[in-house]
Image (cartoon, rainbow, N blue to C red; front, side):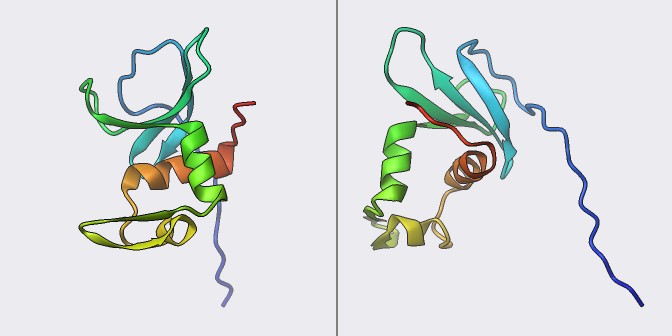
Length: 114
């Protein structure tokens, strides 16, 4: 008996409404539409993870902050979780779904803000 796994490439399209013309869609990951947003004339580039159609249904973070937190393995912690290195946090049960989405988007689609 031969058991195999069949992989199919899924065409990704945004699931939720997003009305910013400055954003570039990176994909749909962990039930979030992930965008990178570079406002023309500004140096700040942000990651957006939209989880609904309503305006405030999203999380955002400057790309540079997220990338530096991972690359430098900064310590993260809070009242509901122990302090841990950021790279360990990414694989822990404490990680938020929007951070999972950002991580997958950057890993699979890539982005450089330089």
